[in-house]
Image (cartoon, helix red, strand yellow):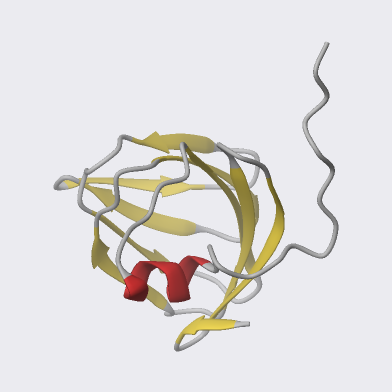
Length: 118
């Protein structure tokens, strides 16, 4: 599903408190500055992605990861075609309709396993 110009997202799975989303970027595609209450962990699978988190810039390379604290303003731009970023968000909370549409928090994942209670 298209999240923004040149940015496509797919919800891989989610539970009661965690959601995992894969983002695919075209070169130059941008995620505009935004913030949300969730912590966000990003893992770069391929390509190069420049993040700006609360005014600090970092470039992720394949295999790199970072954590965006909850409520921190952040943005990203893909430096190569076929940049793939897998993000996890926790805890899930109700946010704006715009955020829900961008991240796909209302869509059902293709496969979701219930949490195992041990």
